[in-house]
Image (cartoon, rainbow, N blue to C red; front, side, top):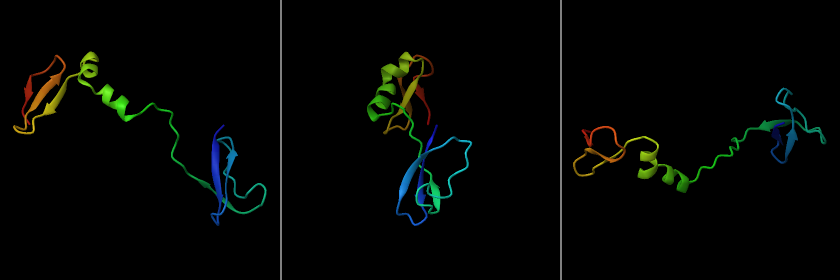
Length: 94
């Protein structure tokens, strides 16, 4: 069951409550009886996302191994040159 965070309307106290998603949000603090509101927090996703892993996934070897083609823009000419992959032209016009 999900854990929800609530705070009193005066903002002085926060607490957690384990509730079913079907239950209505709490309106009062279970111990003090003060009026409360639910605090919305960003979800905690258990993804293995790091800068190093992303860099590894976008490496030329990984891109080519997975059947994709990667182009990089030449800063001088403005054309895109193929740096990884087997399909497609060697250069693309901007």
